[in-house]
Amino acid sequence: MPPVAALDPQSSFVQVCYIVSFSLFILGIRRGTHPTTAKQGNLIAATGMAIAVATTLALKGIGNWGLIAIGIVAGSVVGAVASRRVQMTAMPQMVALYNGVGGGAVALIAWAEFRHELALGGDIPLDTFVPTLFSMVIGSISFWGSNIAFGKLQGLISGQPMKIPGQQVINAVLLGGIIAACIVLGIDHNSSPSQGLFIAVLIAAAILGNLFVLPIGGADMPVVISLLNAFTGLSAAAAGIELDNVALIVGGTLVGSSGTILTLAMATAMNRSVPNILFAGFGALPAGGVATEERPVTSIGPQDAAIKLAYADSVVIVPGYGMAVAQAQHAVKEMADELTKRGVNVAYAIHPVAGRMPGHMNVLLAEADVSYEKLKEMDEINPEMPHTDVAVVIGANDVTNPAAKDDPNSPIAGMPIIEVDEAQQVIVIKRSLSPGFAGIDNDLFYHPKTSMLFSDAKQAAADIAAEIEDL
Amino acid sequence: MPLITEITIFVLAAFVGFEVISKVPTTLHTPLMSQTNAIHGIVLLGGLIVVGLSDFWLDNLIGTIAIFFGTINIVGGFMVTDRMLGMFVRKPKKEEPPEGSGDDAGDAGAE
Image 1 (tube, rainbow over the protein chains, first blue to last red):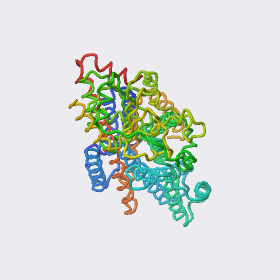
Image 2: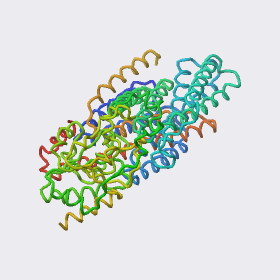
Image 3: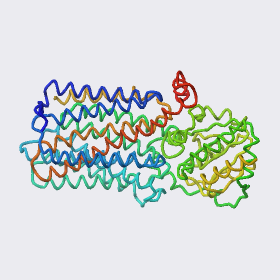
Image 4: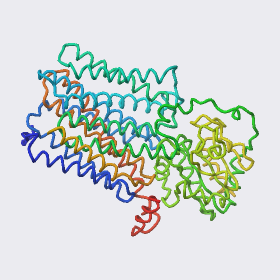
């Protein structure tokens, strides 16, 4: 169909196009690390992608235009509509889903490639065969794992860790079986049962992907999504080796290494190691004895909260996942505006793992027009806490739990927290006393200087804003 | 391409990825993850090659689904990243004069 559709895949022109496109990826990611250039960086990377796709479409011998058109048009429509419609709060799930389909694409390509090599007859060279198996297994794990992560964040599956007895053993056996089957396939893939064995590996990898993510609690999902993102990148790089495509190798590897860094950064912020997150089943720990005791809490209404806030000099707002769930960011911003009008100094304290992804809170607050300068990172705000009159915790839980500092036996011991307990007064807006994703009780709720406002975050923020206005 | 060349490219690209990404303000973690997520949609090329060069129905079916998935990954990934970043860029200009304020915001984010 295209007039120039006759480029030799090995020609310099094609290679140069691919080099231009992966250079644009690198530039795009680099720009993406700075707030003022990030949007431009995204466009640069997208341009690189367009060049890579256009070049591939112009390769010699490419046919089946009808099918290609169907895939691209349908995919574009679904991708575009989904990305326009998704609520900002559901962003992490969306990333998990996009990551999943990427992994699925890798696994399918590996399968087709394996069939293609078999059909060619003769011996499949190991340097094609090994990456094919690798990309198929990892792509499949990533596809199913991401779907489970999506299900957990979307609330389709319980966010609680799901453990079955002997889970680790089953996973180990599955992984061992996959590797053994791969070795068998590597030695002899020309005999007739190899196609069946290949599909068995595909299915085993799918089960492993499910079992791998199911036992991990919802609080750890950001780390898991980031890790699966890196996995998909690596599998794409392996697909690049099997297809001799330099753009795929570099693009996939860039994602693999960046995803790894992000995963480590998130795990560090939670003061936990990646193996610990993946294999320990965080929330599966029984809640400590303290949690079962009935302890008194101070409960207040919006009017009292409004008075406390309006007559303070400085207020720090600590948002968490509850704010995201309640879509409360605009209401919170209005409340903060009312306070600012009265001369109260308002800042937002953002814990690195508040919400379901790093930067989750920043995205939401940015959507509500809260300016950058008011968003303070944990290390910046903690020293100011003792001079803060009122800390308002909106839908955050574990990231404010003083047990992380005080109780060495707590499951979250050592995790850095926003030290709201250092502030003069604390208002916690929360629907109930139920524990957060770590599944442990929060001592903060029972602290003498803490007042609990039991309400939906959006409703509470709107009520407080109205009360402040009336004062 | 010889395998050893491909491994060389792989290793160098891994280091580039580490270096390019290492200093990122928390603010940008989600958009950046989303952007890199879109970039691995490059596997679409594999789907195009599979479908473009094959003439057996099963390969065509597998490949077309791969193209569909890869395109969702790319289009959705870049668009959703653009949407997230659109919210960041607009802000500083609103509150202060456009000149210089963008840089201030950037520094604040990078701390």
